Image 1 (tube, rainbow, N blue to C red):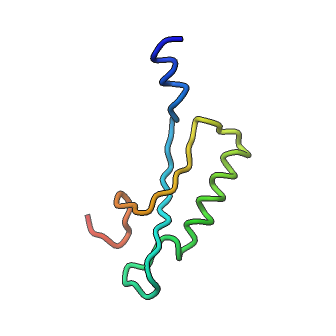
Image 2 (tube, helix red, strand yellow; image 1 turned 135 degrees about the vertical axis):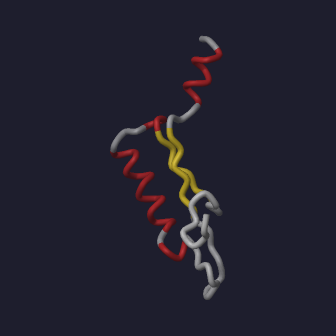
Length: 74
């Protein structure tokens, strides 16, 4: 098996990052976890299995998502 074949077998086509950070109650920026992000990530993971996405898509947890921040001006 070639090196390219080995690499393609180990990598996913798409990574989905779900921010599940937790901040203390009352923090001005709130937290993704308080908004149900953990449940959403779990649902997406199960749904991916139902759809038999296999190694095409990986649903990842992350503590901080600076790529998507709704309260931050760009």
